[in-house]
Amino acid sequence: MKVLITGKDSFIGRNLKEWLENTGEFTVDELDMENEQWQNYDFAPYDTVIHVAAIVHKKKKKIPWETYYQVNTILPYKVAKKARKSRVKQFIFFSSMAVYGQGKKLPFGNIIDEKTGLKPKNYYGKSKLEAEYRLQQLNSEDFKVSIVRPPNIYGYGCPGNYISSFVKLAKLTPVIPVVYTDSKQGFLYIENLCNFIYQIVTEKRSGIFHPQDGEGISTFTFLSEIAGMSNKKVCYSHVLGKVINYLSKIPIVIKVFGGVSYSSSLANYPYNNYSKVDLREALKKTIMGPGDIIKNKKNSGD
Image (cartoon, rainbow, N blue to C red; front, side, top):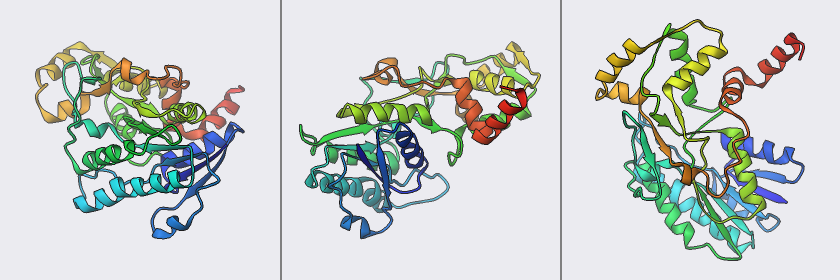
């Protein structure tokens, strides 16, 4: 099976290419989308096109709406139309949880389910949603459109890695507050995402999908796992937890301990078996990297 990834050298694209090719079932090519030359590329040999090219939301950098619109809305629509004209069977579009416009909440987290409305709050989310609307119009029996709305994706080498902030926090603090254990943030480890996409591609599924590792992960669980991996001695404090609970309306507390995640019913459709790598192993691979893991196994005699 031949797959074309539109968007070269992205974290997701790079990992997808390697993962799919390692199955022995795929030939995967990447296409640079930074100039108009992509329009001359022949899509006809491919069974599936996976579009990952995008401009992400950056708080510190003001990017005009027109740029988001051209790159995140118009570009994938043009690519999909070219794919359909070339008789490609499937088009997979990477959208985002940002289309819901939902923020973190305390004390129980913010759970997105089938009843949650689409109300994006920033240009990134709005441009992704506009693309979804356009792409769904192209869906047919002969051209399957699959829209994937992942939460935070993490893995070794991921730019702006969300996990790194937890690693720094775990290294700095000798005390972990026992608080907000039910407030969970949605995450998806990169290998589990690749496994999910593999199933979508092999079965030529169309629709809107919300892959996520389990029901999400609380800050308490993250800090505990990271501390355990580093063999660091920490104290678990219910007293500090009560203090932080009292400060629940302060933005920094919401940012650190709040969560937004998908409901199980959304995350488990249409599969519930794609998260093959568990949290502990995923964190180990993300923090240490593949080279260090191999080195440690050799040193331990495994």
